[in-house]
Image (cartoon, rainbow, N blue to C red; front, side):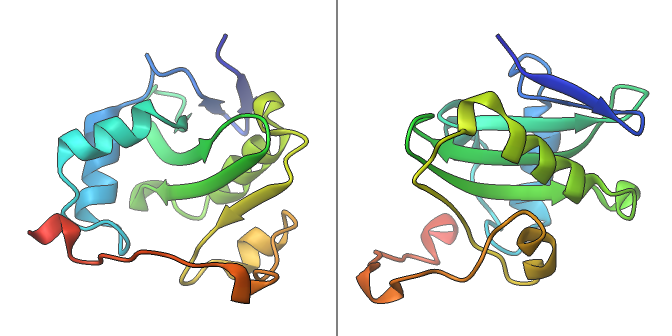
Amino acid sequence: MPHQTTEAGFTLSDDPARFDLVRAHGWIGGQSYWAQGIPFETFARACAGSLTVGAFAPDGQMAAMARVVTDRATFGWVCDVFVDPAYRGAGLGKMMMAYIRAHPDLQGFRRLHLATRDAHGLYRQFGFTELTKVENWMEIRDPDVYSR
């Protein structure tokens, strides 16, 4: 059953039937600094395999989104947080993070991660800190995967 809340006239929901995948892909694939050029099919699979949240304006238009890659038991990675430029300054970033932190499927985790280039202050308000034991982390990184 989808989880939903309303704040300051915006409705936040994880209902996949309500999520505007085309609009979200336009933001992430066309405007984000982290996933420029992501193919629609790849983005759609990523959303289908994640807890995907939309913030909807009073007129029903999706105004912001976030995605949590999670097993819904032990771990989550918050990603693809994006607020449409027309709605910035309305507190949607904070609303999205409060929604995620309170979501019933995202409680009791051992780890909740995210990466950001420029929103550290926002995320610190919700308990995020720099990585601990960074020397234990490894990755395979292919920054040009969407351009090939």
